[in-house]
Amino acid sequence: MITNVCEGTCHTESQHKEFMKGEMSMKILILTGSPHKTGTTAYLADQFMAGAEEAGHEAVRFDLGSLKINPCIGCYHCRDNKGECVFSDDMNAIYPKVLDAEAIVLVSPLYYFGLTAQLKSGIDRFFAINPELKTQKKTVHLISAGSDEDKWAMQGVQENVKCICRYLGWKKGSEVLAFGATTRKDVENSQYEKDAWELGYHLSR
Ligand SMILES: Cc1cc2nc3c(=O)[nH]c(=O)nc-3n(C[C@H](O)[C@H](O)[C@H](O)COP(=O)(O)O)c2cc1C
Image (tube, rainbow, N blue to C red; front, top):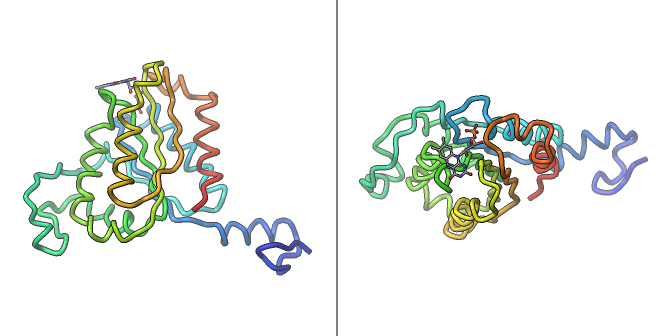
């Protein structure tokens, strides 16, 4: 008999594995920002998702580069209208998932030392639901890739995510930062690929 959190209700290793999956399972929202459907960061997102699903987590993914998301125009309509945005676009499907998620994974190639405009546009639109988001507990993880080899190149995205977390009262989670990565081939069969899978697999609250 296998005991710890299952308190002896599991009799085999496989029963215990299934039990643990149910027990530890988290709702994860993956937001990717590259325009390349099968590029560097899409590949790392695939690895992360595979690890997360192997661990029994419930992962939902939106590739913002393939969606219609209007950039926020700062009209403040949402402030006077209970969080309703003037735009009705693909954010409609993302909002409930943002609210539901226990962990959010931001996946973006480095574009001028920051997140891509596609991903940033989606994040800016969180503004409409800020009041509710600030009452929630979430952890944000970052996966990024860029051609540069220098550590400083990633500082912009790292700080951006850190500030978002601080502002919303969320926890800053782990990072997989792929340096010297210009194309998918640079991360295939690399340590970065393993790191992305491990991040998904070992995710915890
Ligand atoms: C417009 C643009 C801006 C970029 N800016 C940077 C940068 O500031 N630093 C960097 O290291 N790489 C930069 N890159 C390289 C990409 O981050 C890199 O090729 C990445 O692997 C692309 O990932 P993807 O295939 O997921 O889109 C830039 C590429 C483009 C097209």
